[in-house]
Image (tube, one colour):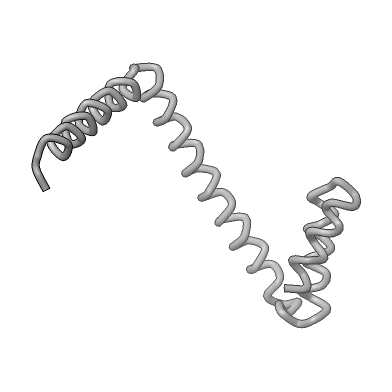
Length: 96
């Protein structure tokens, strides 16, 4: 938790993600959260995770763009509104 706080404060203070990351890693190594021998593996796994997240976000953005350009979002919205109106009218007409 201390490393996260230090990274956040350094990032806000200097306006640089790199300085925040270096500060967070330094605190993790100093407090033996991550041993120095395992440092390369931890950084490599972190980069792999960030790459995976970036790839997923890129795919999702492309899919959203396809849905928007083909006007499928508006069609779906219209279907949902009609469905909601039918349900509302059934509830309103039926006696309780």
